[in-house]
Image (tube, rainbow, N blue to C red; front, side):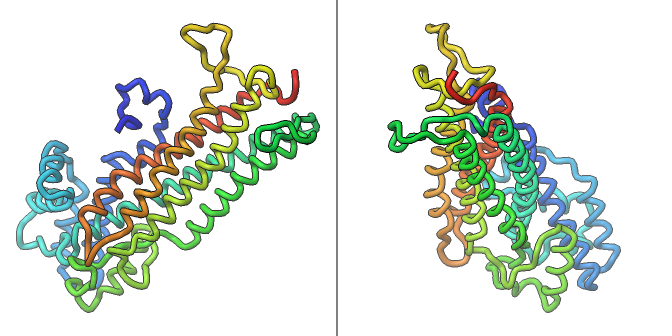
Length: 352
């Protein structure tokens, strides 16, 4: 995807190393290995397999060095990386101990639990950035809040307002995003452990204890039942991204209009230049916030389609989710970073 292609010039618009790292193949692999390790240790802790077998499985996990070409080739055949990953791991320790690795789980347990770990960490990063933006808006309110502006309805001059009024509207949108993020975090990010068809029948009579052990190790919650085909938690996270990007888009939209020549109610340092018209100062960062909000909005319909799983698992919907969600998260993370930089660059609000 262009967002993650560092050799593509468009990457300059979406450069966000922190978010990209959380969404990288290496981080996803690290989380999947953590899930496998948590499962192996849970089997040992509940005397399902011998401790010696668990130790051999964990040693293989801890020392695993991926051959990315092998993992990619396996994914192309199987549609998911886990079968090849498990095969590679099992090749590193004796067959007598193979029951201590993955036995009873399915690929979706590993991929979905790893995804929950990723989303939890993304929330922490985005929470920090949202709080930074609130602080920057508070500073602008302190510096420019008493400056008069022309209030505009339907893009026409209406009645005078204070700058504080408009800035508080911006801040309220960001605060709403923070509240939604806190609500999502309070419910926790749920472990997925259902086995091949999601009914836990392959996991034995100690599945509850195993689930609790894994959830504690991975900092996840234990759901009432496996959520193989119930993707509402994914929809909720995508909706959070949409709400955040919309709040940022509101800021960007207002700034582009305030910066218009003839209105000039805001001055931003570091504005973009034109190849043909050197007199122009284009509000690139503000425009990017609007474009990101529109991009996320268009992806939401796809997320709702991806939430529809037929029977006990959908390869189509699952794959569509992989195509959509990481790019939505990266775009939102980049927009948060851009918004923070934009607000720091505000030099004046009000008529010059």
